[in-house]
Amino acid sequence: MSEPSIFTRILKGEIPSEIIAETENAFAIRDIAPRAPVHLLVIPKSGEYRNVVELAAGDPDLLAELIGLANSVAAEHAGGDFRLVFNTGSGAGQTVFHVHGHVLSGDLTESSLG
Ligand code: 5GP
View (cartoon, rainbow, N blue to C red):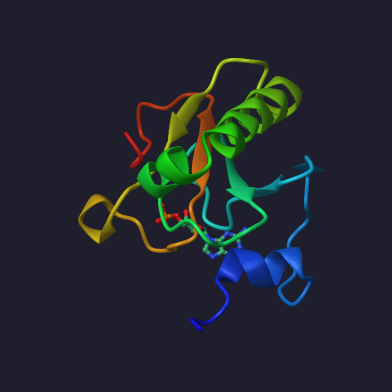
């Protein structure tokens, strides 16, 4: 068994982070190191999928749920419009191998996430 990811540990309450929204199978937190005026993360509760490609192949309904959660947190925290980024692979900057989407909003010209 691999170690639980940092996001699984947050979900279990082992690492402090406010859960700002959740659905049956996903939750949202603020990124600890924001790279945009609004920088949230949407994360499946299960850590079984390492990246969005695996998630899309293995559970497309959960991917749709994750995108719906991104839309609702963006409506609440970012006024509606948002960019959704899934870093896929370490060469693309992925550091946590428990799939998550970055919800970015505000002035994104300085954002290092595209
Ligand atoms: P990745 O680089 O894998 O696409 O994104 C991982 C994200 O998780 C990074 O933006 C990083 O700042 C965020 N992160 C890492 N550890 C923590 C943490 O303990 N709490 C929160 N809220 N975010 C974290």
